Image 1 (cartoon, rainbow, N blue to C red):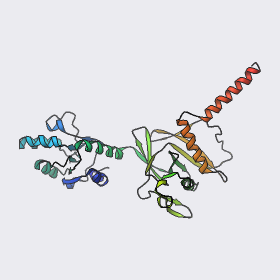
Image 2 (image 1 turned 90 degrees about the vertical axis):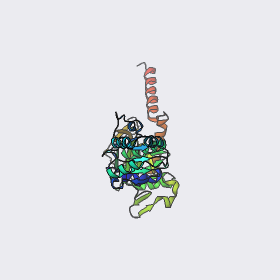
Image 3 (image 1 turned 120 degrees about the horizontal axis):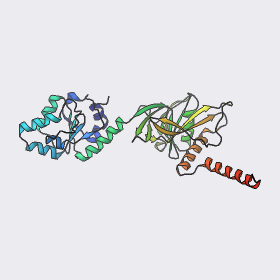
Image 4 (image 1 turned 45 degrees about the horizontal axis):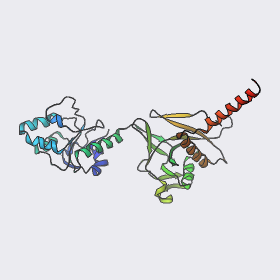
Length: 314
């Protein structure tokens, strides 16, 4: 459950929120990632009004309320400030009427004052709430950025995920998160991975312990989040298993209903996993540019066969 208290702790300073009244309602639940400016609702038109949204009161609304008779003002406020209203934010530093302050205190609805304009509050609050309400899950793996491509390295424990990431850092690539990756679905079309605050920029290397990547390699080798463009699963080499040697068959894995290109990378002594991960990243960038080496090879191979058959008169 995401509450007003959570919003205040995470984004209160960024939005310049100061609590005026309704302190006892800080644990109120925020039901949806929507913010509403109740202009018409204050005028008495309540069709389509949804009481579960955070309300932003601008200078115009406060000015309009002041023009009303006290009794009418109280009635209008009663209609929009319900038991399900998460919070109210008064914009541009304009102090609300004493009736609004008193009513929010009585109904335990947090009432904040901000120096931001109503327009800015609407857009920024909506953005922050969308961040919190988007679909998310936690995956086991290591997320790195290689040549601008976000690669989620997965595999069984002790297969060498962290060691591969460490090798990539040596080549000036970036670490996003080691061991635990929080994945969020953005705009219903792409995924963004990040790490827990507690373990941010840290790696666990067996035999060494916990290392701080930002301190060892510099701030240029870390970042807070990255889109997940590829998933690479490391697994121990199995001689009985058939591994694709051409790459015509493109594999995908579904994460939060988003299809992400998927590669299985067999690991054995002598294989340079770091170099192979770099190659996968570069090949992915070429595919994005419309160049597919495997398909080009296949087309040339089929063309060669057709030419030979033509010469033989087949």
